[in-house]
Each structure stands twice: as structure tokens, then as C-alpha cells.
Length: 337
Image 1 (spheres, helix red, strand yellow):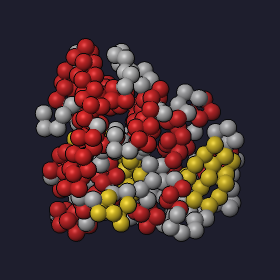
Image 2: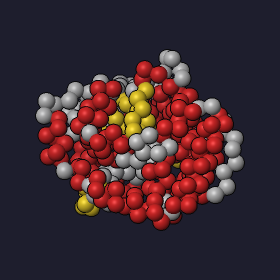
Image 3: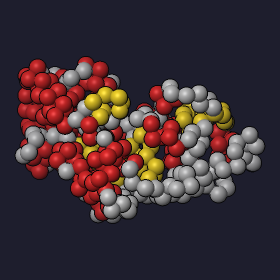
């Protein structure tokens, strides 16, 4: 089997040709032609990443794609920035983009497809090529840091089987509930994927109201991460990071994360962060002003508006945590506890 001649000769080791999407039923893959600036600009590696310019690409069969992986495929270090969703992960990912040699990949669509199809043999069979192709870079790339969609955290164990360091970014439950209740579509996104988020987790207390169901989704991620961290072989590769710490000390918290990933920070790291203006803009759209003060005001308004729902979620989570015996999680329910 030979690789399709229409693909560029550097396909196997260059991030210039991201795997955009795949269809397990049809056995097809879509590959695009990117420049480094396309990655830097993209908050989501889906159709939104192509809105600023015309992007060319190729359609490949699974057989053609496999042929490209039989040769000299790149093997850069790939690290993972897992998160619970809407907790500052885009900002943290963009801060890491400031580290020389880092290629940040934000929410690659193939990983989301794998998460939705987990357990389906036709979909699971794509995990090897999907993850192999993440390990490519550009001439100056030393490491790849992948920030997947929050749902992809459900398959963290299998992704970590391929190596690399990982972080779980989170916020306290009270803050997260206020965040998710700002927009009905945010909560709907969680409810639509409940069965996947809760799969194989020992959470027994029924959740009925919106606040309870959101709290259960938040707790599921905490329990899943605790389970991973309970594996002595895996624990040294995991870092647990509260986004409140990033807001309190952006340079220090991001330096700690960079060290966990084995990245070398420049000597002017705090100055680079200040000069980037990232802390004063919305991480998913840099045309929108959004700093720590704006965030506090927005969350305070949401918390006041949805006070009853937030209280329901907190009460549910406290009861479930006490019943399960994982009482160390109680300190994560509210900010500063």
C-alpha cells in the first residue's frame, strides 16, 4: 500500500495538513491545508476555523490515510489540557501559545467524533490515526498541547495510554453553575450528552432539576479525574488546576502548568503575558473586551438571577459527595473554600 501521490511529501510530519474530520461509516477523512497562523487564530478546529479565508484540502479514504502512517510519521510530545467546559480553558491554551515551540490545538473535531462514538467499533478504529496525526508540528514546534472539547475528557484514560502529560482545569461548582446558567444553550449542551458524561461512574443520587443535573455533570468530571489520579502509574503525569488560581496569578499558574508539560519558559514570561493583552480580551473572540472584572460582574448577575437553581445544585452535590465518602471534594463546591 502506498500513500496517495496527491498528498504533499511532508504530510506525515507537518501540522500544515490537519485531519479536519472523519466519517467512520463511509471510511473517509477530510484533510485541510493550514498555516501556523490558522492554528493561532482558531478557538475551535471545526468549520469556524475556516471562516477567515479560503482553505483547500483533500478527501481521503481510510486506506489512503493508513498508507500515510506506515512511513516516517512525526512523534512530537503531545500533552493534554482537559477541562470541565466553560472554565477558562481557551485562555489557558492561548497563554501556552506564547511559549516558544508550542503548537496549541483547540478542540479538534475528530476527538469529539471519537468521544461521541466511543464503544462503536467503527469509530474506535479511528483513534490510532487521529492521535498519531496530532503529533505533527512545524519547523519550530517542540511540543503539541491539545485542548479538546470538554466531552473528550470522558476518554482521557485511553488518550493517556498514548503518553504525554495531562491537566484537568476546573472551577468550583458554584461558579460553574452560574456560568452555565447564563445561557440556556450552555446547559442544553450538557444535558444532551449526559449519558456519555455519566457512563461507568458511581454516582447514584437521582438528579431531577436543572441545577441538580448540572451539578451531577460537574461532579462526574471530578470523580473521573480522582479515579485517574488514583492510579500510581498515572498520577505523576496528572495536574489538577483551579482556574481561580490562574486568574489570581496568571504568570505563576501558567508557569506551573508549563513545567508540568516540560516546556521551557522565556525569561520574560510575565512581560509576555502582559504584552499579549490576552487577559483583557475574550479568549474565544479577541474583538470582545472581557477581563477579570467583567467576568466577576457577569457571574454575579447570573448567580443572583438563578440563585434557587444554584442552591439546588450545591445541595445535591454536597449530599452525593457525603454519601459517596469523597469528602475532600466538598472544598471544591464554593470559591475560596
